Length: 211
Image (cartoon, rainbow, N blue to C red; front, side):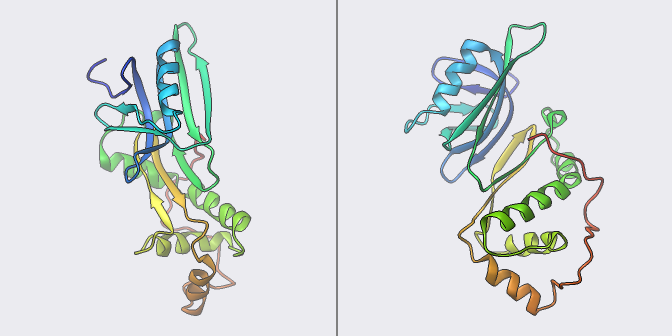
């Protein structure tokens, strides 16, 4: 067990299956773990602590962190086992995640990148829905790839979190960013058009994400 990443605090350690954390503030947005129920509960209590940062993950994020409230918890006893699978997930409304259980043991960066690219159609769909629901900017699905690409260029509009294990990607979308100005500029430069076809040539074999 010592060679596998572990969620740990001062009292317990359990297997780490996935993690998304904002390194600037050492804040957890997603954590997936497996181990004895009492140990998982101990780690969960550290993650949900109001102020003190008491949890960390060996080999992944060794600096203590806590969770971004509000935290939703999902737990299930594994069949034929005394272990519990526990997920801690921030319920902030500007978070987009890619969760793929089969990626939990994938450490090769190029392979993780390929798996992420295969799921970007789902990410862009969530991004479109988020902008349409939470901002005053109407966004066509066909625009999502272009807006996403330009929003990631020298702006704070989209923050990429550090991700590990079954979490292939995690992003925070700044809902206070001036999305209307960005979209207007892209329309003026004809990088976006009102007759644009809903086609993403850079997306390969899109698959749905887990969460």
